Length: 362
Ligand code: NDP
Ligand code: GDR
Image (cartoon, rainbow, N blue to C red):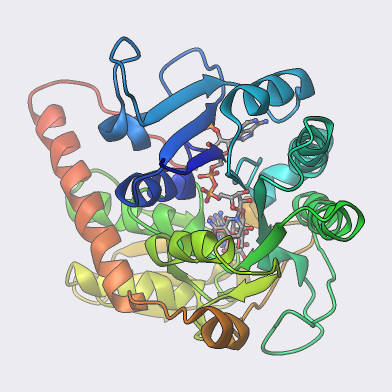
């Protein structure tokens, strides 16, 4: 009998990689997808199985973390061995614009799932993974950050995730549910959302290289992050649910780069070298060959409260779970740029043939 997993947030970056990973392991994978006015399944279309075929291993259900009725019904129907709660309004800057919705989906959504497990009497059957985050450390109290570092969230997103973290710990202690928090530091990939800084950079650099865009506007160039590859990190999510006892783990590479470093790395992939001039909002990244300004600071991307620096200590995960990240920072940046070049080449071809292409620049 194959194990049954339910993934919330299956249409997102991690959901897509995790679904692929679990299918390869022989799982029957169920996913929660939101109803949208157009198709929102790009990242998982290659896994799609026609609903009219029998013996399917990949099944999607309409649902939303803000609606307990559908969560209870789906969990009752699916009877999952493992739930991976990856769904969230996951953009930190957007959480300042939609704080109440973010709290509803990210904080209460987690509670709704845990309550569904309890209401359905699945405490001993269903293991629960919660997508916790390094944003919990926020205004950091210790460098590097590990499982025992105090939290100091700095955005409505991080505060909502703080509730989710603790409700997960509480339901583990109160009701004996096998529930784990993966405190994951930033992880990226070619299918990362286009408005997170890494993908925004690789997409823009590819488009600049092909003459589809003139400039890249960014916010805080000095922010530092510990960036890993999403593929490595979903393996970890699964490993956490395969232990004898549930626990919480920090997942990180232990290496830190600034946003400016990331821009330099992406540029060097396409043979561009930038000279940086000016300071603060006047800082510019200038192409050494042409003298053109390719990168400018736009204060609209500054956040009301910023997380300046994050660096993780993944020792516990390495020792207890034998986890080591396999994809390096340079390999990840190269892969992201390579894939964005392919997309830009398609756009460039369309443009040349007179078709309008999507020019979103957020
Ligand atoms: P994405 O933003 O790529 O994906 C988020 C997913 O959640 C999407 O499938 C989205 O659906 C879904 N979703 C959003 N709101 C709801 C809702 N109300 N009900 C149901 N589904 C919803 O995030 P990632 O894949 O990057 O991250 C996965 C999880 O891990 C998130 O919880 C994130 O906060 C957390 N995290 C991410 C890190 C990272 O660096 N990537 C680091 C640490 C934690 P739709 O496609 O329809 O928008
Ligand atoms: P983050 O990721 O907030 O760490 O949250 P993001 O890529 O959005 O920002 C990283 C850092 O880059 C700075 N920055 C910019 N960010 C964006 N998005 N756009 C810009 O133009 C820009 N310029 C500079 C930001 O200020 C920030 O300091 C991600 C999400 O995946 C969360 O869901 C997850 O919990 C954390 O990572 C760990």
